Length: 383
Image: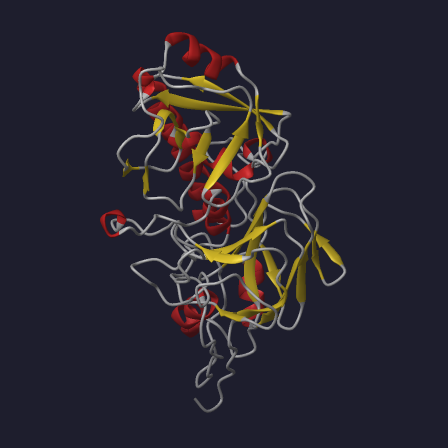
């Protein structure tokens, strides 16, 4: 290793804020063992942050409830902050959300409490490299496993950044090194791996941080960023237990403007409003059965609960299920928000997923092109 410069990449927690956890896309296939899917509640925001930093969609990042967190960089890092709108500051320099940025070694990134909404996400190029448990790095705080020691982050925790592929959207054209030059080396993180892969083309005086900087500035289109409306309109599919409710009650469910309860949490969004009772000749509960994220349960008190990602089974009827394209909306709601449900067809639900995936693909295509190219097919998706 003689003659090579080594930088260990990661984030040190200076202030953890409220319930900051390591999350990813969740662990799947263990429901029969009682293990919930878990993962980011606002999965779309984490996926976009990963996209902006060259990660795969399942890379682990940081999910914060109500912000108020601060991190110090070990090594030069490329990262992105998404989710609920908040102030992001690099040292004393304000930064933009929904845009990749470079956090230099030793500098601190502060993220305030959100102006609206609940959850904020930070992705770092290479992903947060905590050990996988059952195929995922997601924190399951209720059972104390996964993530960082199975718990929310605390001051002085150090989150290492893992290796990753060279971002295909980094089009650098360096000059070849002089004979006998020995390029610098980065110990971890995809910027390091990308640098090693390209080392024969860089002179020794090339700064790895400059390479990362060349990869920064990628931005998610403003028109596609989340909005936080006065009333959330959530699309859903009827069932699987909708026939256990009368037509009048189902109509009430659709016409009611519910209010998000303060007792909502990572397991579910509890709603306040008029009672949604089952048919009078039916018992209050049913035999426990599998629950998918987005299922809208009606417990004994008749107040709906939108189930999120920390539940495997449930013994209450599910009058409807939030469609996949709208599931992240539930992760953005905060107590006091108003919610209305809009039943749609299966075809509409699938079309919503296809539309969302086309957006990801379109932006990814642009990121995979030259950093200098800002158009795809003559149309700028950044506008």
